[in-house]
Image (tube, rainbow, N blue to C red; front, top):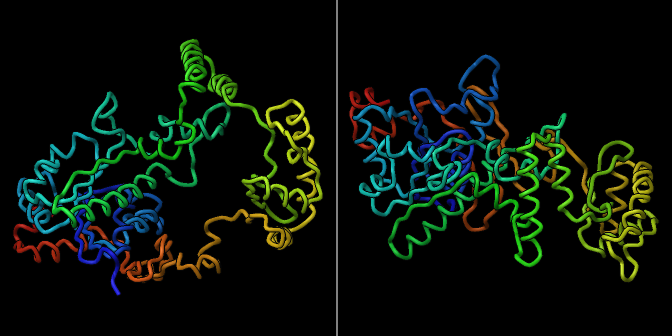
Length: 419
């Protein structure tokens, strides 16, 4: 059986994370991906080197570009135009991520590409969009976290300076998901109508989509409070107040509620355990399991009341001391029997041979001529009739240039000129 996108051909002008991640997911689904790099390569090839001192084997690059063919193309060479035209004519989708002004300079803008192939699905990603005062600015995940509110929302600082989410490039990866999702939708639309289209995604939009609950604003309940807050922080910024002082002003806008003992991490006897109870029935199960009385289960409980705030502060040491008495595995067994969601805090490096991960096809292994056996995260979903798979490692720089361009009918002289 082949993947759900078997027979779909995609050309990818991409670098770093967002667009390459989109391409890798579409490759897992069976699409043929041709990644086009400049002669110097995607800069991400040279970050997080797998082999110290040996450039071109970037750990993240290899994970994000698996299953693709790779060619080099000097887009500043006028002769490259005929190669791009031929590639576009024979492709279903084109992916590009760049500043808004770059595609036009390289003749890769939608209007030009559409003239080669009116049915093309053209997916373009920028940092901030093609309109507005910031549209011309370059941007990466860190910048998107900063301007979107993700960073301040974490409320994590070092010496008064806000810190980004560091475990993953969340805006980049969310954008990659959005690109892949929208491309699949556009292909379905084309199947019904015969029409191609242009898709635009942004790091800013992806970062905001992760905060739709916080972003939500009611004219009746929120508007005046937020208006006052915006006025106050602008005044504080102009007066030179520290970030910590501004963050304190932000906290005043947020309703203070009782401490949440039921949705947090705990130090236990031999590690850290996360407990996640998001409903009162689950919270009651945890409280009963620990034999702790909590007034939140009384009729008429008000989490904003002074009584609730004080009582819950007094519960913190009780919960923490109880949790310290048993090991991770002991608590997992106890909470499983009680129906309380829980899990050990692990490092991602521990999961390459984790039984749960392996049995759900979340680890994939392939061979590489230099790196040997490689383990990577497998496709994030399973499909019964059109299974997903990873068929090859990421390409070395220009590995498939001759193969791809000769298949398109170009001779050795032109290939040598444009690669």
